[in-house]
Length: 469
Image (cartoon, rainbow, N blue to C red):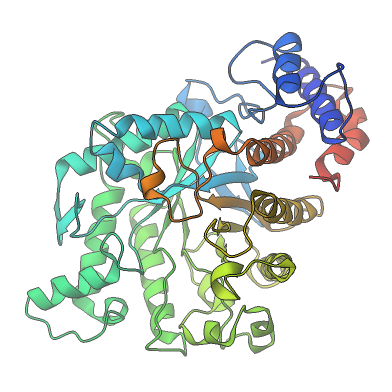
């Protein structure tokens, strides 16, 4: 698109969303209908441009693969095609399993379509299912080709909707196999393993994990014919979902595993970013920072946020936010205060000690929590988004967030209490869309080369950082 035309469109949409954000009745009526009608009336009728869709195609990623490049970490930001790439994203862990069944495969496409409609650009999902129902890896290095083809479908379908994927490679927890399954495999082969934490230390189990990494990274997608390690659709590799090693609170065991596996992934794939998958707990290397932990137990789980992320090969930091699990199940304002201080501490450390971006890769609140209501959920989401924007305007390390979790309609039986179904949650959907629009405009600012674009700076900053999310 011509650069000046892009400036005009972005500026027009910015003013429309800005007025909507302020509660101004621009055309005599308010609400979601106003936004959709206004955009359809004044902008290109392409499905890539509505305000409720968060202007998700601002970067103009077309069918040309030259425009679909790897995202990289540069200092404390993500960049792609020379522009910043701040993330508004989501989790849906079960995509591969749903894609493995033709009767549910359509839900994968439905989810990506709905996510893109509100401007979400990154999805985190599992690239593992070890020894379980519909297992990807049935036993060490033995794969179900049909399930691997299902993962191929997830990757190819994500690209259709311009959504990038963080693929997690194993679970700390028992769901979908996890480290416990690797220990079972080890014992079945004649080892005498007594703790699931031996996943991190035993050479045989380390070799099992490396073999899985190699199989996934070298996989040639049967839909696109692109090797995973060469596919820009993959945003990053995640070493493990929420690693913990409670048998060694010093953190040495887990640190050794992280260092070895991050280097191994990079030896196979130097193009993609790598992240660990940590929850963000502070450990022995930074005793002054443990005050930010949600409880005293967090220091005993063998993780160490700063030290872990200093391992060579790790490109950005990951943090989870679950005040309702870590502090108390009954929601309160204290949960919001914790969320803000937890985020600010990790953003500061990512800047001061790590020099890398940080993504808050899981956050949410369960409908099962005592005192829950949808208004509180929106307030929590707003707190996360506003804290990130406060970092963005300073050029800080707060690089994005991923909601836990987004579901399409008709998948309630998979809901753990945290699921957000956009069609049933209009206020939350609008909140997500507004943040996506802000992120998209910020990501596109650097490409505004026409002579009058910079004159919009003050109005743009008012919109981007307006207090009322």
